[in-house]
Length: 263
Image 1 (cartoon, rainbow, N blue to C red):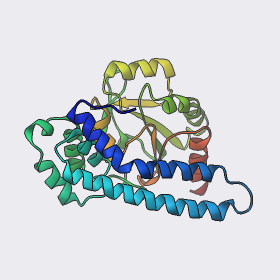
Image 2 (cartoon, rainbow, N blue to C red):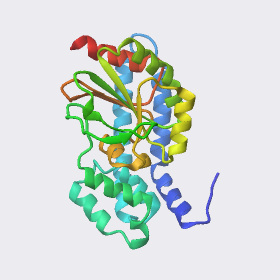
Image 3 (cartoon, helix red, strand yellow):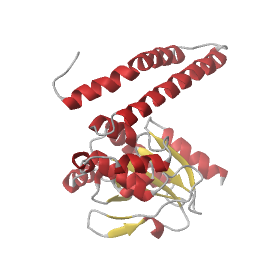
């Protein structure tokens, strides 16, 4: 299917064409990897991932060059947001300052500005970053108010399928590990009513908060949330000990139990 007819669509097509070959090769290799069986699977799988990593590196360089050449476009700004850690910070600042007025006022540019404001994205081994957000009654909470426990930060949105699927497991964790761990769900919903609908549906028994800034607020960007759900596990000393995105059944509980067992 080919769609043309606007500058935005044409720019999107341009980026897709740059990375299309690598994308197809990557999917083919992934299919081969997941089909592996037997004793040789480990060595063959390692070789496959080595090729995939090379494809990813080449495609990343293509996207970076696309940003440089097409900065004042929605597509380039969207790509830049996911490449901010790959460019030197001074380069990202230069990119932002080089935007013309019409693009500087877009949500795409605003999240770049937020990234520059909050500094480096938090990774495993870093100290947590505090935040302030409200619960469904409008009461303000901070992350730092939780003392002496592990904290599982759950960045989610109301209509995210994997987020919905994770709720039963989060309920299990909340009920069985509440002595040592507190769950805090941080909503990336843009609208308050949407967030509240999710709470009515899921009925979480743990703290669920919203800061009113949608998916591109300071907290969401500081924690490096680019997909939902994203989980961040913080130990009682305030150190991030695990961070991952996505959900499949049993994964969250397994990761949390492993960390609690090692303390």
